[in-house]
Length: 387
Image (cartoon, rainbow, N blue to C red; front, side, top):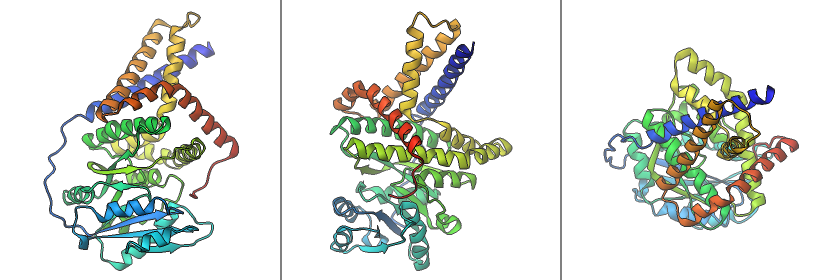
């Protein structure tokens, strides 16, 4: 009886989650509002927190210096956080401003932004701010795309982030799939529905008004999700700009990738504990669909876990010793079909290469690896907010 109840509950939850994701996927193909061309108007400060990034920062700056935007309307500022390599020299050799941040225990991207924004506001010569990671390469039209969104009334914009080398390794191929599902279907679908897109850590853009009003209170390891939920509670929507493109470098080393993913997963748990109740109260109390959608985002497990649930359901559905009600079998089957369709649509929409499709053969092993990573991190304790 207990096992049957568990299987029924698991199947219903799985199906509901997949229906939600399928709805966002369908919405992602709805016609977008027409983007009116807007001449360069906003003066940007591009803020790049960096910790020992001598190998990456040079190429990042070269891409920024080549963007199609008037040179007098944007400034690049790198904040070197406790760097012990040649990051500062690499930055200054290109004539770019470099601030040095040394705060001992208060290290990490969130603390760097909390320290840097008041200094930028005090100067008073910028209308908007862009936050990039030190390994992010922006497209030549990035600033023009963000400028157009701001001219049309957006106050917070998230750019289109993509994996730079999706066919170099299995890990990067599967990460490309994750980015495609999130970016092309979930975030774009939310934007089409008038909901709030996600902040992704790099390619985050804010008008001066937002930073003046709220500052930067987010200092956890997942400062992007934390600030996104903070903004939702204050009625601020994040707009997704699919034409503001950024490519990022991912870890090829499995151990480094494991540490990074564990920080993301455990960081999201921390943010969920802090914000979920408030989002639900505001969502149901005021009928705020954006807050309810934000709560759903916090409750949504990693796609690898959904994949695991789908495989588990498929096995239970196929085994003869499973004595679930016939309706339960159809519930699992519907969820599995939606999962496969959702994955396929994401791959097609991102124009994935053949190696990405081949990497799907390793997906079961990847799922088990992700579960192992999360369990190990839970056993060791939650990570902090450092690099």
